[in-house]
Image (cartoon, rainbow, N blue to C red):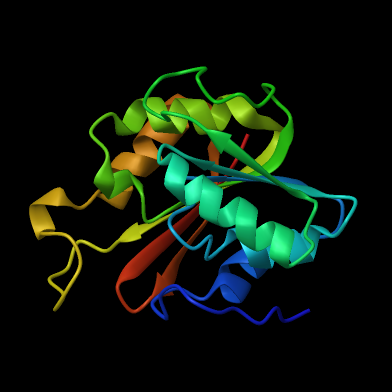
Length: 184
């Protein structure tokens, strides 16, 4: 199923990434650091359907308020907004081992305590759950964060492995982004 997306960046295709992650009906998915327009929240909500759930998690309450308003407008009752500081382990008010999939899309580069964020994502995943990490490639680009602020995918792979997350797939997520899928 192709979900029409509006707003957000054309840099990353939600349909492509959600298909890679195998998001489907009745799943529980957490978009960790969901961002201003919920670029992945809304396509995910449509894919999981009324019997699934999407946790839109962010540290900015104004972002969550905007997502709640849009969800109400679009009559999507399966989106649950959760305020959290992902750099504090256990702070996300979502039950441990309760989500089928978690998304960390274009957000690790924005944070200092990346390891804690990975630990928090792992905490939320069910056994067999999958984590999608998408971030900026370590190549110079006409925009995006400075090269020294980008997160090396080899570091992400090593930390995930240390946390017991098994690498399932490594792929190009867009012209400027890498993608990694791990399984707990």
